[in-house]
Length: 181
Image (cartoon, one colour):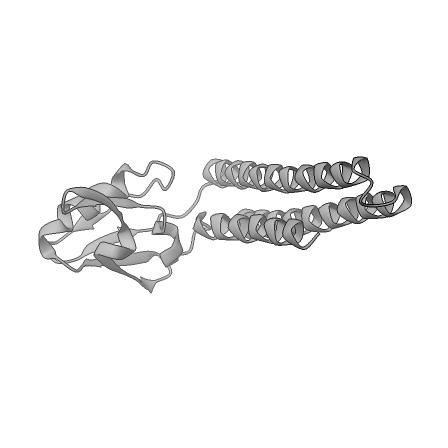
């Protein structure tokens, strides 16, 4: 049970992390967390090659640690199509303006959030299935009694419902935040 709960908690935490990367119309440094930049001959996460700062609600400023990588930083941000951002650089700093979200873009982001929620639910179901298989194996090997196995299966179901509820609540909160103008 404890292993299943920790796997489910991990799935919920990953889901929350993924939601924080989705844009809500306000600038946030985590929006660029998934951006990869080619630097020193390999792809690296943006936060390892540059400092990301929110200067106001509609602008993110990215300052590369090595000025020679500025073109690659701007290209990395521009190439991430899921963000839909168009950075500009002045030779020292990359400025990323965050445009206001229109209704269509908001709906696209809500769909993306829903697909991330489904991925998290799949992870929950996988953890539940592994726990069920373990209980069945223990029951077949006569390591646990029939009534104990039934009780454990009920606990597994209840725990799965609890974590599914957490994911649903996070998704509803994110949808409300996205659709609010």
